[in-house]
Image (tube, rainbow, N blue to C red; front, side, top):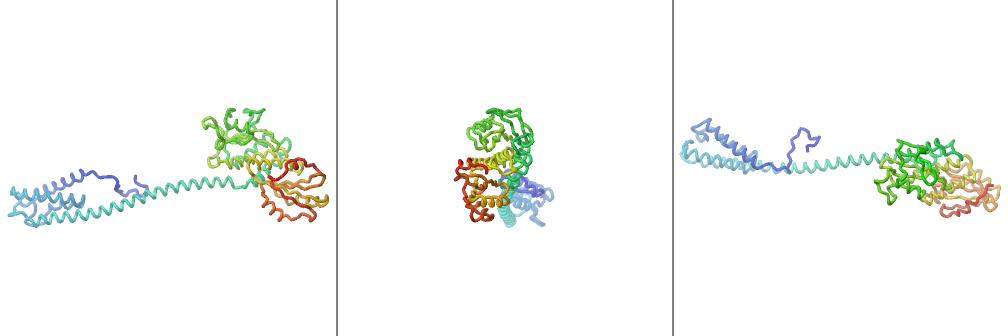
Length: 426
C-alpha cells in the first residue's frame, strides 16, 4: 500500500516477484523487431557489416539494460544466429563470418547486463531498507497515536482526580451547606449530592433510588444524572449490594455473570449509624474511571455526604463528633483510611483555654469537641485522613497547648471504641 507521504512516487515492491515469461517475451519481441527493421531498411546489408553503425546490436543492448545479463546475452546469441543464417542463405553479403563483430556484440551485451544487474541489486537493497524503515515509521506512527490517545485518557483521569480526598470532602460539605439537619435527605439535597459525586467520580448515568424494607423501590427515583434507565430488581450487582450493605461492582465482585446485569456498581447510601436510606446505582461511566479506587472514592464521598445531611456541621457537638468518629472508623475498616484522635486533659480552666485556641486551628474537616471523660473535662480532636506522623506535624505547627495540659495522640486502630461512645457533654 502506497503511503500518503509518497503520493506520486513509483514504489517497487521487492517482495512481489515479476513473471519470468514477460521478460523473455519482451526480449524475443525486441530482438525480432530490430531484425525485421534492419532487413526492411537495408536489404543488401541488414547487419551493417560493410559500413555505418551496426544497429542490430540495439536489441541485446536494450534487453541487457532492461532485464540484465542473461537476457542481453540470449538476445546477442539470437542476433548472431540470425547473422549466421543470413550469411548462409546469402541474405547478408560477407566473405566469412565476422568474428570480431560477433565478439563485440556479445561483450557489449554482457557489460551492459552486468552493470544493470549490479544496480538492480543495489536498488533492491535500498528498497528493502526503505520498506523496513517504512514499516518502522508506520509502527511508530501507530504507537504515537496510541500514546496520544493514552495521554488524552490520562489527562481526563488527572482532570477528574485533581482534588485529594480531603479536598473532595471539603468541597462536598460546602456544596451541601445550608440543607443539613435531621431532615436533610430530601430530593433536592440528594440531587446536589449525586451531581457532585458524578462530577468528581466521572459518572455519566446514575441514580439514587429509595429503599423499602429489604428491597429497593424502583419507582421512587430520588435523584439522577444522565438519562433515566429501567432498574432490574434481580440485577446481580444490586442484590449483592443489598445483601452485604457495602459497595458492589462487576469488576471486583465474584460470581456475577456479565450478561445478566446492567449496573456497573451499586453503593448503599448509609449514615454512620448503619441505617441505609437509599441506593446509588451506576449505569455507565467512562472506561478510564471504572476501577476499584475510583468506586471506593465515590463510596467514601457518598457516605460523608449523607452524614453531613443527616447530622450537619453548623456547631461542634458530642452527637456530631460521635457520628463523625463512627464514619472515620468505618472508613478505616472498609477502605483502610488513616485517622488520628487527639485527647487533651487537665484542669477545667486549662482545658477551656486549649479548646478555645484549637477551635481556630483545626482544619476544614477536622472535628473538635469538649466532653467529660470519667468526670473530667477533656478536649477531643478528630483528624480524619491523617496518620500519626502527619498528626504530630500538625501539633507542632499549632503548638498552642497550655503547659499544664496533657496530650495523648492515638491512631484510629488503637482507639477504645467504647470509651469514645461513652462520652458525655460538659
